[in-house]
Image (cartoon, rainbow, N blue to C red; front, side):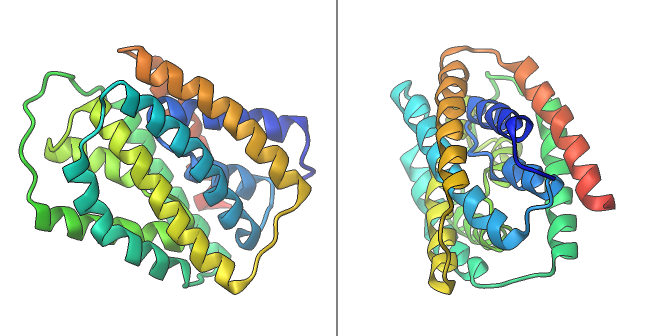
Length: 242
């Protein structure tokens, strides 16, 4: 399938929607490239690169509004960074790669259909659990080529370690550092960018800026989450079954 206007339009929408909830969008980019028939050898570094761009933009937007927790973040990345690098050194078959990605996307979509309350009581996190959580998510992130935000966000909310907006800020920077670690492992194997990737990055920047501004400045973005969830369900089913 030829990369054209439709591909870049969907890419913009993915960057916009993911950034609005503090995510980089790698899982969405990977699904998009998988549907377009782009191999994981090319897709993973491209997705991680776009992830770095969009997640950093999202982090800055949420951080400026005060939605961040350094203690949670630092203990998470103590475990995640080395394991994200380790995961990036492994390779899996395209078949299992698509199945794992599809499953992650499906559970992510369910998370976006669920409305969380902003006034839930926050519980102090156990820092050992945070490091273990970071290590597990980091390894999966490096292996698949994502930043890990789609796993981290629902987990933080489920454990009540953080509120919705702060979770978005933490996830954004978590995604950024894990994506860099995963990219470093991939580049050690040898990889070069193409002109199309520069266009992708430019589109992702525009979508990410707009999406993160909306996500960090408006209290309710429930409709955006549900639209994103619907798109993810379709993509996950296609990846698992095809």
